[in-house]
Length: 308
Ligand SMILES: NC(=O)C1=CN([C@@H]2O[C@H](COP(=O)(O)OP(=O)(O)OC[C@H]3O[C@@H](n4cnc5c(N)ncnc54)[C@H](OP(=O)(O)O)[C@@H]3O)[C@@H](O)[C@H]2O)C=CC1
Ligand SMILES: CC(=O)N[C@@H](CCC(=O)OP(=O)(O)O)C(=O)O
Image (tube, rainbow, N blue to C red):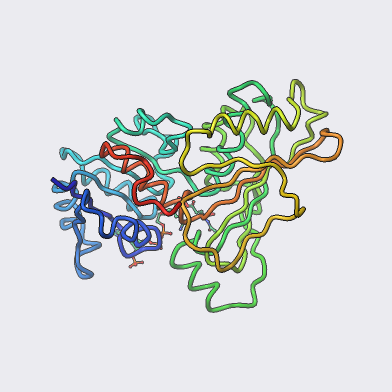
């Protein structure tokens, strides 16, 4: 029998992409609320209590409300918002990092933030392996397509096509920093500088490293080797050396993708390196990750229905 899935926030950017990935899949049946009832707490509560799985594609307050509306039900929840990413009792929905079993067996899964996905994918395995120190003051620079900001930012960028770059979180308090620090086991919060570019989807997350100045840091080939081994079994994450062309391109026309590419880009002597992740903020950065976790929770192959 098909698993019933309620997407709370199904009319939003992340919700629509999840529905796209589940369309035509016989393993899942969607519970859909019509436009008049989709924000009605009583209708949402009824749907949450009827579903096997709920995916919350809501802002943080509405996601917290959904979790309390679900109390007393058997529904297993994946929350795409920031509300529960460092909350006790929630499994971080990054199967490669948290473990496939942990996600498969969880009742409450928090879907990683899009930027955090790139940062944690690059750094957590290297710190766990002891190849980079946990007590280093890391920096992270990143750019995102404007769909990362949901409907409001999409409308803004589509209405004002003159914006070439939008720096934000200027006071460094971006909401992804706590999960980045927690998942990598860092002593200090990373210094994180995100920006939005005039592309609908796509994301580049970069961690520049002064390897020669870092106590106990490994060489670039050792970092590359560690990441390649760590993700060898992942159907979505791949690891590569610097491209021979000497450049990496993010294209405005990129198709939806649930994959992520990681790079180790050293300087000539190996004393410095850039760790770099390229992904689709709406794919492995949001909806693709939610469907990967949903597959595991439903006992299915993790990459079923993903855009790979
Ligand atoms: N976009 C992205 O790349 C990523 C987004 N996320 C997170 O996913 C969540 C959803 O984001 P996103 O899809 O981008 O946001 P959107 O603004 O595009 O969509 C949110 C949806 O929730 C609906 N909504 C608002 N309040 C309620 C309510 N009380 N009950 C039911 N529905 C409600 C909105 O309705 P209406 O249509 O009327 O506005 C809208 O359809 C957020 O927490 C976001 O931070 C996470 C990773 C990446
Ligand atoms: C471009 C842009 O605005 N991006 C969003 C993050 C998108 C995301 O990952 O959202 P959640 O952490 O809420 O899940 C931001 O920086 O707030």
